[in-house]
Image (cartoon, rainbow, N blue to C red; front, side, top):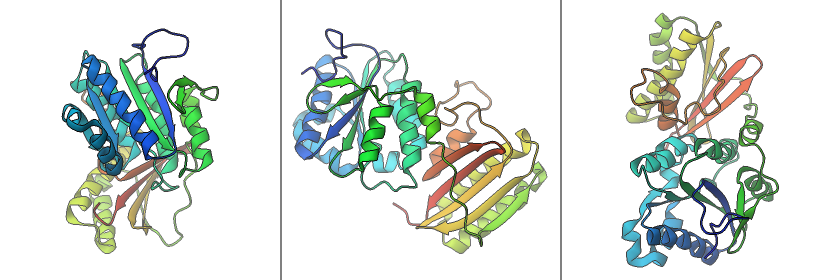
Length: 321
């Protein structure tokens, strides 16, 4: 099968390949995904299937006993927040198999994703190209053409250098610079409700008051004890950065929305690195993990950079998934 053969080359390229798989039914989905896994296994390379549970069950059934040699992750859990997929799923798998070419099926966008989540998902797909540039890896990203909005499919052509619609991958004429594409999904955040609770702070000594305010809002919304602790850790990371690295005060706004407790922190700081929170720092680094922690703990993180600073919006599901 020539699916992972880069246009204009012979044989399977060892360079990084990032492919959007456009499928229309279960048979197309499982046939293409199983072919990638079987190619990896035939080469003695590690393979990861990171897709929602239903897709994983289909792929396991098609692979049969071969599935025992494959790593599986439920993307609806591991990738609930798109911001944690690159560090916690993709790079973690590559690091665990250093020295090998890794083969990954990563389905980060499915019909159950909400419009609120989508900009973070699309930016994630674009930034994969930056995070994996020069790495020995092949990542196939399935897109359900029968259920996803045509605009989402058009975006897949923009975020993936290669597109597969059938058996072979071809270069995508719509593919553009991944950093520019990711920046295009850095969209303004909708305005918080006018009756949302707010807390303004400026000094590190005020952080205990910020945490007390947040704990009270979490209790009123019915957020569980474990998730409240994780919420406090995540927001404290952001608030600490505000007090240490910005000139103006920070504003924390909290409200309940569509089954989530939403916390927005606005400050005057700027984030220059588009991969901040997605690339683990060196193991001996003494800083640089704050946004990684935030992405790991929250169910969704939206970040908007604007002329006056940065807005961080964190969602924590009120119902445990």
